[in-house]
Image (tube, rainbow, N blue to C red; front, side, top):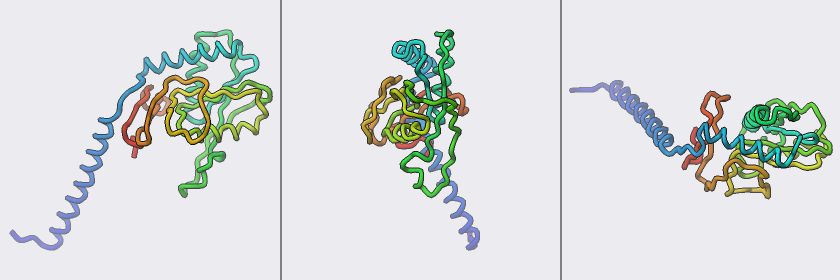
Length: 216
């Protein structure tokens, strides 16, 4: 059997593409295999309920308190908390805000991409108020640092507390700690915690990956 040069090149190209495709399929399979569910939907709901009780214990009628979620997953967590609050404590009237920190991050000029900002919606002054800042995961602390800087545009609060669903206790870059946390996770450098929400087309759950980035 004799092959022409074009046939040989086409065969090599096809097998190269096939190998590449199989490599990514296998990599994705291995990544999914490493994922561990550390909070399912029921567990997440129970965690949100517990956080609600803790907030009421410390803030009472919320007369001088407000909750501000960091875009975008912190806002989703805030919405869940307020929805559960309305069920548990229907008499409470809680002031809510949304905070975008895109241009307050210390890395927004890096990467060569134009950052896409989200909405900031805080139609009140936080002057002398007790602010509860909400995000999904506390990791290095840099997101919270940016949020604290962004908050300065809305007044000088009496205090700022931090509520997170997941507290990654290792690899903190800044001396920032959570006042309220749903779950503490000991994750080293190459581990990754992913919070999924129905709002983004996924499931309500928290996944733990051994790899650095489950979507890379």
